[in-house]
Amino acid sequence: DSSHSGYTTNRPSSADKGEPLRVFNLGSKIVDGKVVHKLELNENNLKKILLHPEVKDRPVAIVSVAGALRKGKSFLLGFLLKYLQAHERPTGGDWLTDDDVIDGFEWRGGRHRVTTGILIWSKPFIRVNKYGEKVAVLLMDTQGAFDSTMTVKDCASIFALSNLICSVQVYNIMQQIQENDLQHLELFAEYGRMVTEMSEHPNAKQSRLIFLIRDWAYPSDYQYGEMGGNAYLREIMQSEESQHQELKRLRRNITSCFPNFDGFLLPYPGKAVALQQSNCVLVKEMDFNFIKYIKDFMPYVMAKDKLVPKTIDNKDVIGKDMLEFVKVLVDAMQN
Ligand code: GDP
Ligand code: MG
Image (cartoon, rainbow, N blue to C red; front, side, top):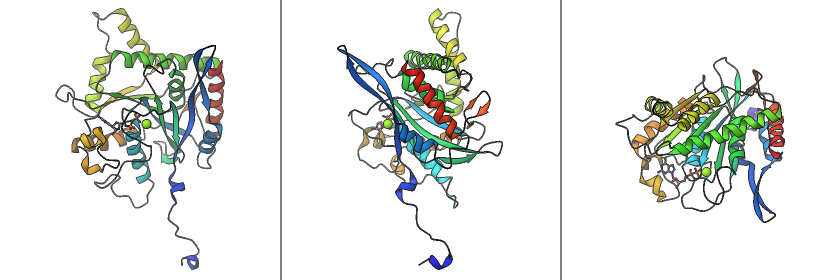
């Protein structure tokens, strides 16, 4: 009995740990015999997150992982979550140990259908930025199905929205950057530009973009991690005289939409993860090299100088303003 000491020592319940909440969904209905996609906001869930007492009056920095389905986004978010949770524990210690299991954002193998949309972890993480200010960091999962049932154009609204509200966008790509990955990105950025112009918030600061390449297979060309990633990206993004006009135009446009972009190359995680032989894979069953670079990636994404709050007209956006901003964007998208 601890009541005599004046405070209780209850362990946090699972509700305190947080959970992923769906804030957007891309619904579809049939109009005149055609499938029409419609962006659906779950305002209650968004309010739970942005009007949370630790968030509503505090600058917000959203870290998003976006990309096609079944490319390991939720799995990666599980590591981000562990990293942030460990930094909230006063005891310190390793954030990742051999016997850890990666969970949180649900990740699974197989090919069953998952809806397109945006999920945000319900609990904020309070981090101090390089100016000593406390910032509420939120983790966001943005997924779309780049397949025949839902074209990239149909889910452009989801990705555009995610780009507009986040501070850091991790663009998750398998194996290597292909021309259509860049074309998709351009489509999302242009859609976003159109929406902000309609919403009269043209001065929202663009997110920092990180191209994260999974299962990188050419470490002798470009080494895993940040340096190799940046060198690889420079090669992909450079315009050469000999290049086709369209390729040059695409690269120029992306560079102007995202003044800040970097690359990061991750190794293959090993069979235990890729083939998902069991439902709960331990860290020690994953490839050693993968874990090594995962451990480099987390502080790289969450670095004080990189994790800056969203700004509009050079003013930090606090939780309750973010809620209004999102609603304005959604209205503009419905038109
Ligand atoms: P999401 O749909 O992008 O969120 O993908 P998930 O995180 O749910 O993972 C989908 C599948 O990919 C799971 O079966 C994972 O075991 C597997 N997976 C996760 N990360 C990687 C990776 O880096 N490389 C490979 N090859 N597979 C991965
Ligand atoms: Mg997922």
